[in-house]
Structure formats: structure tokens, C-alpha cells
Amino acid sequence: MTKYGYARVSSKSQEDNSSLEGQKQQLIENGIEEENILVEVGSAANEIKNRPIFQKLINQKLKENDLLMVTKIDRCSRNTLEFLKLQDILFKRKIEFISLDLPHSNDPSINHLIATTLSSIAEFENNRRKERQKQGIQAAQKEGKYQGRKTIIDKTLIQKVKHLKETKNLSVTDISKLTGVSSPTIYKVLKEHLGYVSNRLAKLEEIY
Image (cartoon, rainbow, N blue to C red):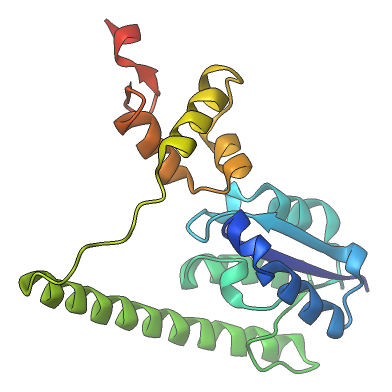
């Protein structure tokens, strides 16, 4: 058996504030060799198929009877359905999965059941939290107290995206990785600040 760990942070700012190091330390303390820990910077909203390092781990490195460990379920999946699909793939390939935020045993079948059940509960609680947050925002808006989230888009980011897109000819995914900013935000910069239109990202003057 080879034991692998997977750590993910959403942005370079999280990487800087030791979130990543905290995950790596937890994995090491639970028996994962540092050289077997794969790290990825990417938004939690990204589908598993859009996480190249995780895909490499699943499709190329993990073999039968190996173990995959994460510190929390949300490091490797966005929601219960995605997690269940991942669990099914690993279970059929006889790859053991452990998430340190869940109870686990020496029986892979019990781990499978526990993770499936608690993942559903976690998503239920997360949806309830989002609904309460939404209701709180609506109440604050009615009272004129809500100003929204502060945007991270500034002149520096706009110029950086412009350079990477027009000089380096990079894709939105690559720009997102280099800047540590989510793909939706990069799209917003391109469309609202740099004159690109549609998901083809052609400039308006290039269309006519």
C-alpha cells in the first residue's frame, strides 16, 4: 500500500497564510510521507475534472490497495453528488479513502458508509447556512445596511490580466492559476474592464 495525501487551497493568499502548511502537517502527522502529498491551488467551485493535479493523482498515481487521505471532504469535492461519484470510483478500484474530519475505521466498507452519510449531512447544513446568510443579507438590504462584498478587481489586476491575455495569450484557466484569482473573476475583468464579449472572449472590434 502507498499512502497519498491531497491538499488544496482556493487562492495564493490562503497559501501565504499557512492554510496549505496546516493541511500538509495534518497529513504528515497521520502517516503520509511529504513526497506523497500533492498540492493544488484552485477554487472550491471547480469541478474535479478541472483540477489537473487531482486528476493526475486519481488516474495515474493511485493503484489498487493504495490510500488517499484529505483533511476535509471539501478539499476534493464540491458537493455530495460529486463526492459520491468519486467514492464510487475509488471503492471499485479498491482504493481506501480517509477524510480526517470524519470518523474512520480499519474497514474500508464502513469508511465508505460513514463518509457517504456524513457528506450528505454536511451538504444539508451548508445549504441551511447559505439560506440563513441570504435571509440576513436581504434583511440588511431592506434596512440599507448591506454594502456587498468588497471587490478584488483593481487596476493592478486588470493590467496583469490584460498582459497575460494579450501578450502571453494565456487561457482563463492559466491566468487564474498565475494570479490566484477565480476564473469567474477573470472572466469579469475581461468582459467588464477589457472589452471582451461572450465566452469566446473576442474583443468587440474583432467581431465586426
